[in-house]
Amino acid sequence: MPNDLEPAPLGGRDLLGLGALLVGCVVGCTLLGLLVDHLADSSPFGVVVGVAIGMLLGALGFAARVRSAMRG
Image (cartoon, rainbow, N blue to C red; front, side):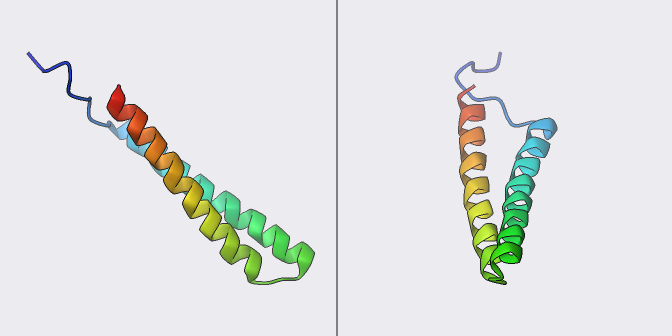
């Protein structure tokens, strides 16, 4: 009988969702950075900041989802 206190492992569907979260954050923020660069003529500042913000948001979202999945 499995121990009820152990968290269930993340399945393939969960991992696909985590990957989509990371890609969505980075791509979305990069596109916003491109838009800022285009409007402000500040290339490549907007893209670099967009990628950095996307990576940060992706990491925070990733950690939050993994933490909640491990709790059950």
